[in-house]
Image 1 (cartoon, rainbow, N blue to C red):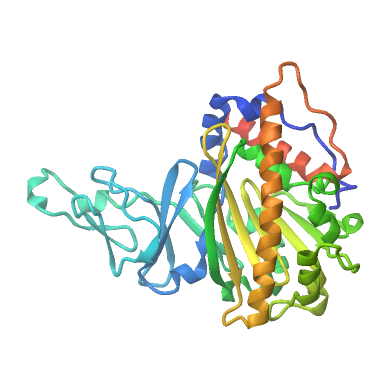
Image 2: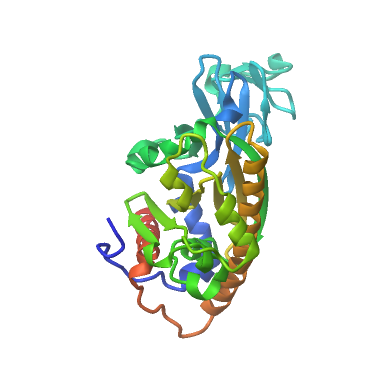
Length: 368
């Protein structure tokens, strides 16, 4: 479905960006019921390897089991609520709590309690780790706290096929950063979801991208953007260098060398598909007017010197765009507090903003 075909509901009410009560409600209505990006399959290559992921206010632990399956749990000991693991690593054949030493198999079953005879009526079988769900999409690992949520593939039909040419499962992480933005997470999402502001706010992108061919397809669970690069050399030296030296990842077609693609997975995950690398970004709410952002960049193993140079230039270009966006979302957050203001109409290039607004309203209403 193209932007021209998509009905455009109204933008969100400003209260939804400024009210702390709404931010608290979103934790249950949206983040505890949605698929959240956790990492890369390379983090869980062998039994015992684990990763942790933040899901709203909670933490999830994903571990590769002895049988090769991905097992996901609330990252909390059943004894006194200690956090079991942080980051990524290898737990071997068991998960041992660092507080009192309660120990669990990688399938979550409790197998060890120090001084267990001192616990009257202790039944280990009744105290497994609290379950969560894990699934993969094109080499990325996602988690969900909701046991009744539809499978990830049903939420994102057709997306795995669109990602397949980039062979994400074969790529390796080469940078990982976190940052913050001074705005509600939904304002940050709105900004990502439209190119309407590019001619005014992003002069570099306007020189690089063919704005007239900047296209969007809207689906139930995600949005897919295509942004072809201009054929005309940019007047900016760094941008012109990128245009000249950019090379496609192994397996991409020659025509993929001249297009940037963007994916937004509801509610808060992005995948940026460049010819030379893939970047993921998770927009996590941090209160009502701030985000905690997690970025990771992936590339093919053993990159050539030229490919490394392309990737460095790409990242420098995107750092400039990110700085411009931080200023934009801060301006919008400030403006949302204006008494009497109501949102104006959404245009054709804001079809994905309308999709996002409708998705948020649906989830808040469904939660009651």
